[in-house]
Every structure is written in structure tokens, then in C-alpha cells.
Amino acid sequence: MTGALGALDERQRKLLQSWVPGATVVRDHSWGLVGTTVLEVLHEGRRLLVKAGDAADHHLAREIAAHREWLEPWTRQGRAAALVAADTDAKLLLRDFLEGHPVQGSAQEWDVDVHHQAGRLLRDFHRQRSHTDEHYEARQDAKALRWLEAPHGIDADSVTRLRAEITSWPAGPANVVPTHGDWQPRNWLVHCGEVRVIDLGRAELRPAHTDFVRLAAQQFRGHPEQETAFLDGYGSDPRDPADWRRTLVREAIGTAVWAHQVGDRPFEEQGLRMISDVLVRPGPP
Image (tube, rainbow, N blue to C red; front, top):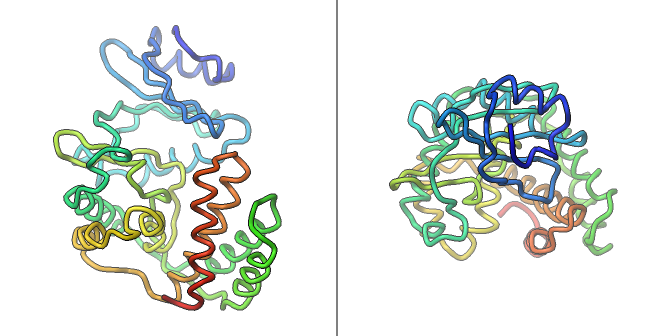
């Protein structure tokens, strides 16, 4: 195999060679902010995508599990890529290459039909299964408080107010479903008018409304027509006011702190704005 494989460790390179001997690297799609290598490869005329995690990676296992357990509603429609091979211990995944151009940054980011399709795809994903998680809220509160203990750029007064609110919440159960975890145009492609889905690295069982939070902070902000189209595709609005409030606070904290740690200044500014928004509007919206 030739090409830019230097970021893969020896075990990953050997595994990949055994799966697709003689494959050629066509393009490096790696993001650069995190330690995940993403390579487009060509093997016997077939385009494939390789994803490999480094020692610190904790996303590949979730992506592999999602491909194995939850993607059928999308793969049967050609809306997500089929898994070819994977090794969780080696943090290596090989899937079909998914044709399409990224929605984010294109005119279709604001296309109401794209948002309608995205809502419908998410509905199909969420409806696969559900169960009650007795400890979900307590875990998420603890995680948010840990974020506030990490290095960040949030001002001290906001930290105090956020801590006070989080510690006042009841730690009850939650109904959880398969969620994408990063549902936004960055992870949508369009091919021949169809929306397709990529990047399941944050897939996990969570409340359905958590997959609305990044759109609410970005594309829905000041654009009610996108939100209306999305909800029409989804078929309902699962955002209970109190649950939604807790999710907005946690997401704002996680966004600001994570982006600060990886040096993504625009995303950090978005997180700080989200914090300002939730603190200006206390209580359930």
C-alpha cells in the first residue's frame, strides 16, 4: 500500500494491508484538530474510506458500534456508508466511500428541503429502539461539572452561575435512543439531491432532543424556516422545556471547553456565545 499512512501505527497498517492489499491512498481527509486519520483509498477500482484513531482516541469504538448496530435504516436507503471491516482494539475502520459534497459552507446549508430530509433521517434513526436510563442525568451533570474544572476561557462569574444551576437540577431518569451526537450540516453530504450522513464518532444512547442542540445553536438561530422544515421531516418536537434547558447548558459548556483545549477559536466563540445565551435566559425556554 502506498500513500500517506505515516499517521497509522504498525498494527493498523498491517490490518489495513490484510483487508485491502495493494490499496492506494487517493486523498487525506483528516480534520487535523484531533488525532483521527481519515484516508480515501482505492482498492481494485473500489473507493473506500479508512478511519484510524491514535492512542488518545475514544471516538472510533463508538463509530464502529454504530455501524454494526444502528446504521441499517440509513444504509438500506444508500444514505450512509456500509461497513467493510473494523477492529475496535486497533481503532481502525474501513467503509465504503460515500459520494456527495459537504452541505456545510454550500448554499444547501440553508435549503429547506435539505433540512426536511435531515429531520426525516434523524427520525428513522431515533425510532430503532429506546429504553429508560436511570442514571443519565446524573452522569451528564457530573460531566458538565468536570468540564468546568478543566482549562477553559469561561469567565469566573459565569462558571459560578453555571455550577449553581447544574447542582440544583434533579438527577432523574431519561428515555434514551440511538443518537448521532453531532447532527449538523458538517456531517451531511448531498448527492443527486439526497442527504447522506457521515461521522458517527459521537454516536451514543441519549435523549432524542440532544441531536437538535447543534442545529439550534447554528442553522436554526435566526432562521425559523430551517427549523420548521426540520421538525416537519422529524414529525414532532421532542424538546421538553426543562430537559432542553439542561441540554443547552451542558452543550454550551462542553463546546466552549473542548474548543478551547483543541485551539478551535471560532468554535470556542460559539460555545461562549451559547453560555451567554443560556445565562441571559434562565430557566426552561
